[in-house]
Image (tube, protein in one colour):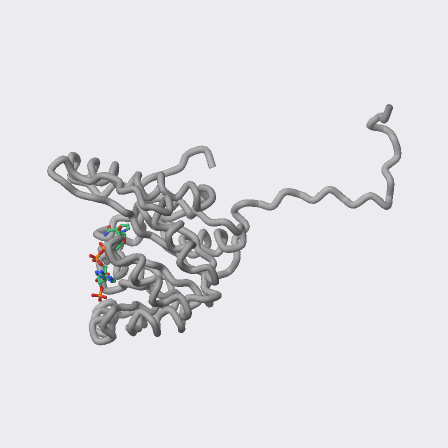
Length: 240
Ligand SMILES: NC(=O)c1ccc[n+]([C@@H]2O[C@H](COP(=O)([O-])OP(=O)(O)OC[C@H]3O[C@@H](n4cnc5c(N)ncnc54)[C@H](OP(=O)(O)O)[C@@H]3O)[C@@H](O)[C@H]2O)c1
């Protein structure tokens, strides 16, 4: 029987203190690219990151459109076609409509190799009853991205943000949490840290990619909230 007063074996390895989940890396030097960056969500994210001091490139299927949108955004945002955006960025956010998701990623497999990819695509349908979740064959948009990009590090985040609020220059802060999903803790933490660059936001680890479907689908609920209450609802995770 051992007792608590037994002398400790000096050769035994010291117990490792658990890592502080809010101890996140410095991501201020990373270049953030946004595929589909001329759209509502893409422009909103680009604006917020650039305003926070991050280097941002927005992508488009047409480089001219991206350059025009970038000039409107200011804050040093650059525009390029999606392939160049992917090549020049460290972290690449996928902000194209679900309809164009697979085709876009398939065509950029090479440029996205080795990159940290952040998927924010919500596969949704709309009918006269409102928004509803679609069921991608792979489980979720994020899992489709992971399947199509075996040489990239795929994560998922930014699903529940209001593009209207992101683009509203009169708002200094956006009051919301962002659920971040991924397989590798180091990758998730980079995305959490990026989220934290936007005033008012926290990035919260919310599981592996196999749980991305619920997060993507949940967007149908805030859309209903927004319609009823004429709002731009965000989400908070409590007790953390
Ligand atoms: N809007 C929001 O509030 C919000 C919030 C959270 C997440 N999201 C997600 O973010 C994604 C983008 O939403 P959005 O509202 O920004 O969409 P959007 O404005 O309709 O489209 C974004 C951009 O994607 C490009 N695009 C359009 N069709 C495409 C296709 N078939 N293939 C490749 N690129 C295409 C277009 O850029 P170019 O023509 O310049 O290539 C367009 O400007 C969606 O998947 C959505 O679920 C949106």
